[in-house]
Length: 316
Ligand code: NDP
Image (cartoon, rainbow, N blue to C red):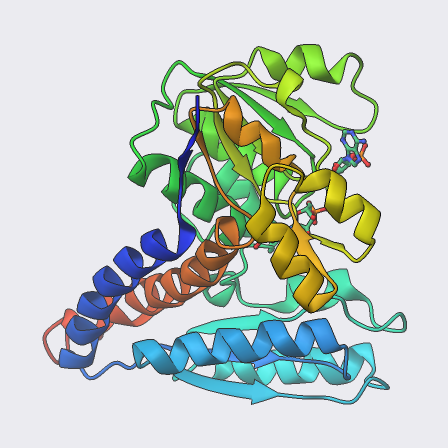
């Protein structure tokens, strides 16, 4: 069996065209949804992430602002910036790019973001809403995982889903979303016993551990749907040779560049799974798409209703 490849770029494009319509409707009400990004210091990976998030805003016609405090910034200074952004009516989403420098109290900063503008879905108020199944802003990668599953026609209701990883930003929210969609969910972590046996029961596997190619074909039930969230950089030639023994094109790309990205799922799993997301080009594009979607959603929830009301309705 060769798995169907679930192409994240195609799904992202579908989502973008739907979002463009919603953005036009909002613009008709005089609203231009806008995202403010806060990028502290000069972490190269963070810079790349923020640049691609701003490029997506520009592509879709969302407003965007980039704030770049120095690496020496204090918690109080960041809290003041977040407060300013909370108070600005033109800012619908606030994204504080992680990681923050050591001297900064990350929790305090994230909790200072107005939950209505928390497009990363990290605020405890939004996490609480997710737990109880109430509407709110949900973390982008987990929503992206659900979009891939839904849009590729996977049966979620009644499925056995195994989530590998229990982080607050990926594993836990993904497990909750799957549970709300009526899957029977098992959450695995570094202390889980007999991991391959547990994973082999899954109809849906979501791998989010940050462990290069750990899920091998013998862990996977034939026909299972596999969503690979992991992003791991491989620079070792011998490791690349082993991983891509059956993928000469990937090996060529590795040789040309000297590095490549590999997920938590071994490439050979494609010979057992029914459907699988590639790395790169699977979950990654969805994470940014869902950030855009959350920004539009935040604008709609916070300003859309207000603008749709007749003049003076707010006072009445
Ligand atoms: P964390 O490091 O926060 O969490 C990793 C989780 O995996 C932990 O719960 C850990 O268990 C579990 N784990 C680690 N090793 C093992 C093991 N050997 N067996 C079983 N479980 C294990 O990572 P994140 O959740 O932030 O990210 C996970 C991966 O997803 C990373 O590769 C990251 O780069 C990627 N990612 C990709 C995104 C995308 O857009 N595609 C977005 C966000 C993340 P324990 O709790 O016991 O320590």
